Length: 123
Image (tube, rainbow, N blue to C red):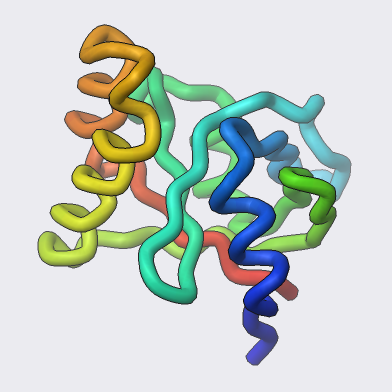
């Protein structure tokens, strides 16, 4: 199993945005979309601001594979759905801590979109 290096985790976690390009069913990447990313321990997580209606999220959930770029790091990744409530509680806190300066109008939709939590695993 491939893991993130400490440097990759730090660079991505410090960046405000991550560009995500999930693979379509035919294997071609969607156009990259900027989203917010948070770190919890040695893992990186993303959620869809638009909830389950988010186009990039629906593609990522279907294909389970894509490409990300953030903080100078570019990686092919696997998307792993997260349903564990304890992890989601920590992700809620991570979003509020990292992005709270943007206000509730931006952070609350991500906190309420727990069902869209995906862990990014390098491949």
